Image (cartoon, rainbow, N blue to C red):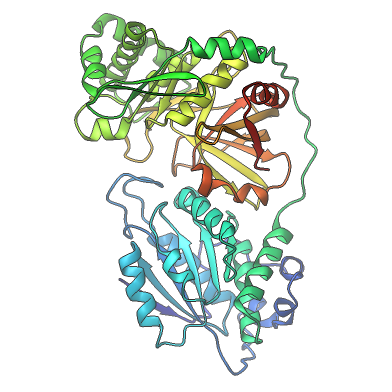
Length: 528
C-alpha cells in the first residue's frame, strides 16, 4: 500500500488540463457559497503566497485499482500504466488547493481499504477522494462507512463499470456523505473537490454531497437540439414479433455442460458446451476460412496488430458458429468468450464472428449474457432485422454524453441490406490478443437503448443522439458517443438493478417497444 503525502505549489505538469479561468472557476462553484468564499488567489496565481487559515484540511486521495502497472487483462488494458494519471491528479489537486494537505494511497480491494480506514481513524482525516481506476475493486464502500465526506471519481474507460454500478447503489441507499463526478475534464473534478471547503467552514458531509451535485450540474452542458437524419423503421406488430420469437432459439455457451433453460421473453434457451463450438471451429473448411479472412482484409479500413493467421482462425470460428446455429435451428448464440479462451476450451475469439453474424441478421453476443442476447434478438426481430450493439456504457458529464463501448459491433446498423459503415480490425482491447472490431458508427441519428429483465417483466429504455466515435485506446474498441434524450442525472440511477450492459439500436423504437410491452403485460422503465 504505497502512500504519498503532497502539499505542493509546483507549477502544472505537462499533460494537465489548462488552469481555471477566474470566470470558469466561479461559475462552476457558484452553487455552493462556501466554494465562493475560497480565496481565488490560492488557485489562480502560484507566485502569490496562499492566505492560510487555521484548520488546514487533511484529505486522503485513495486510488482503487489492481496495481500501478496493470499485469492482467481488464479495463483499461493489460500493461496500462496508471502512474502518470495518478501523478496528474495529485499535482492538479496540490496546485489548486495549497491550503489543504493531500495524502495519496492505493488500495486493491476491501482488505486493503479496511486497513487504510482503520489507520486513518487516528490521523484526523477530514475527507476522502476515491478514484475508481479499475472497474470492480470494492474500496469506496469501506470509505463511505466512515461517515466522512467522500468525493467519488470515475477514471473514464478504466473504472467506469464499477463506478456506475456502485454509484447507483449509493443513490438507491440514499447515502448522504458521498458526492460523485464522472467527467473527462479535470476542472470538473477540481470544482467538486472545492466543496470540501464546506467542511472547513463547519458544514456537514451531507452539505458537501449536495454541493458536489450542484457543482456537477453547473459544469454539465445544457441539452442541445441536434439535427437528426431520417431513420424510418418498419416495425413488426407485437403479434408478429411474439410469433417469431417463439420460433427462435438462443444457444448459450457458458461451460462444458449442456441443458435446456427457461425461456427468456418467450425465447427458448439451450446451453451447449464449449467442446461443441470448438469442434465445429476445428472442422471449418480451411479454404472457406481463408476466403472470409481475405474479404475482411479487403473491406476493413485498416488492420492493426492482427496477423493473417489470427484472421483465418477467427474466420473458422465464424464458420463454426454458423454450423452450430444451423445444427440446432437457432438464430442467436452467446459465448463466455474470455472464460473459454483463457481456459483453453476455445482457440479463437468469436468477436469477428459475432460481427459477421450480426451483419447477416443473426445474433452473436458477448460474455454469455442471456438477457442482453434476448434483448438483441427481440428488438432486432421487432425492427425487421436491425442489429443491436451490446455495450459497456460510460457517462461523461463534461460533454453531456453516454459512450457505448464494446469490442464487438455490426457495421450494418440499418440491417443486412442497409448501408455499411467503415470498420477496423484490431486486437481485443483488454488483453491485446485475438481480433475484434472497431466499427465507425454513423452519427446524427437517433438511437434507442434497451435491456430486458425477464423475471421482473421489465424493459429498460432510453434514447440518445449518436454524435461521435471515440478513438481512445483505453477499454473497448468501438465507442459510440451520444447525447441522451432527457435527464442525464437520472441516467446514473439504474445500474445497480440492471447491471452494466445495454443494447443500442439505430432508430426510434419507442412506440414499437411500448406496444410490444403492453401486449405482453410487461413494463417499460425509462432510465433518462
